[in-house]
Length: 279
Image 1 (cartoon, helix red, strand yellow):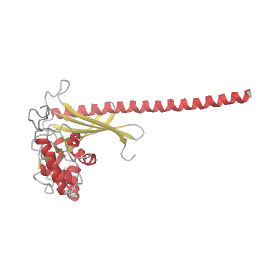
Image 2 (cartoon, one colour):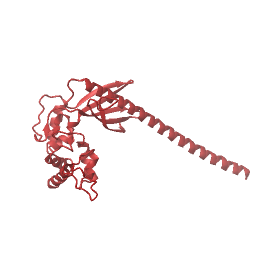
Image 3 (cartoon, one colour):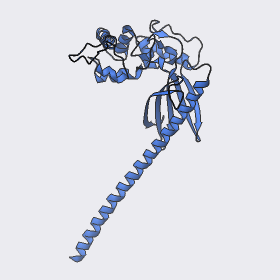
Image 4 (cartoon, one colour):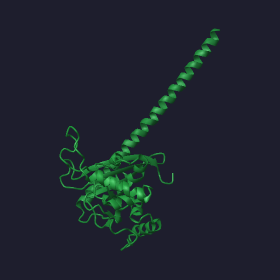
């Protein structure tokens, strides 16, 4: 009986040791992954800072998409630079452009897209009424989209619709509300072309080959404009271990005196870890 009891105790201790070993191994892997992500994010931020510094001193900033290779601490990273006016301005776009966005990218029927676009513009441009306490809208000012997430505040705007259109819009743009096709992603180009994917593919091929005078005839001229911006979106990819990539997207405003620590202002930053291309 004593021998059996000893064997049971040894077996229990073995199970305990195996469990503790597995837990420690998982914690070590999690700590290693977290350390790698922190290091990757630091590299990405350094790459963005180097590119923004270069943009600040250039006499002619890019008006369309541009790829810049940066080497920092022995790591070579690719940074895609795009003026933010390649996106659709929530605060400046005309109702017809917003209706096209909701129809083409949002998948709504034409009549429903037009009605929701008018609701969106009314929410944006018409000052809210005074509450009984006189607090809301007391100064009679129209509202402004502070971020794409504010679309969810508009009556009739569900999350599924928001998820489809959010990557194509910006709340930071001002001015005429027209779109710079040279900097627009394919999803925005499809809106400008009223869903004509063939013409979008043709234009993207011309733009990628740096063809002079790429054909813009497929796009509604009332929705498009030319010229750059002082607002940019930078995308940087940092290779990690195990066939993964850290993708960092940062929107910046290149405006003098925008920050006490740097001559630009970071508007927002988003990062994620994804499998490397071809992995």
